[in-house]
Image (cartoon, rainbow, N blue to C red; front, side, top):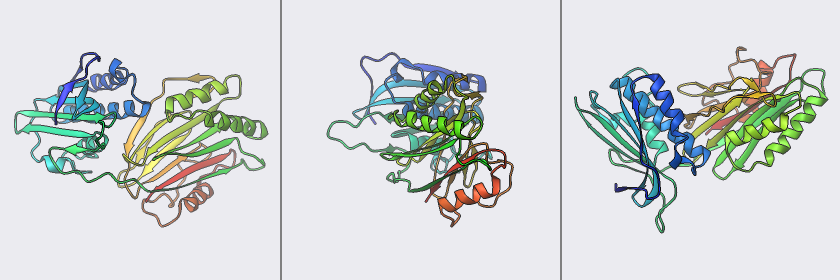
Length: 354
């Protein structure tokens, strides 16, 4: 791996990591660095995810260390480089540490394996008792005449495969109403899938009319940027009864999901390890705090469910089982049948990772 500083960009940014407070500050500040300004929203979220994973490893295994970000040339590519250094006990078995699900501390074990999947190149330098240095770079554009690829100096990386998915959505009006104030969204953009649910406050024809208008407003935003999408909805909701929304981008090439929500829409990923996204408090059109993107890696067999609060999270249903033979449409139908409340509209989007 050959790396040089990127001309015209500001010096590297170094963050001391010695507590969860300092780690959270580093994650937040990483997305706002000057040399990150021209990156896509998705790339900024992925870089902050890498900072989170590597910083968490530092705290977990070494207690303290540092994370440095820089704009560099990596093997001829414009890239963001993340370097994590600590003086801890080192990694005894690097090859095993790169395996999905491997953990020596009883946690999910997604740290290094997630970093390898997100980043384009990865180096790990470690010695027992002498600490660890992880150098990861994400290529921002292919070098002229060369295909973009991923490399790891520690272990061979399997070629990236497109995650195959099957999806379905279902929207049921509140009993006694003919139309729903919920809106489900499924939109394909290249190798990415945008899914989500918008839940207009209340129900009935007026709520339905606003939901329809929000769907039109959302279709006018062509960039897959969760913050831009939610802010567009927020502006359109001003002066109305308001709404909640939860949106997710599933990147089938890098096999990860990014979620952000405002209000009472919820998302869950079912698999070997379950994941529950968090929507920030607020009402679109009235109050909207800063968007909080969250990232989780996906794998074949995972089941992704986005639902309005018309679907009770506490209701028991056996339909949400990873690897179920039911189709996405059958799961959505059964989910509403088992969990839909009798006092509200209910809607969901189901994505099966095949």
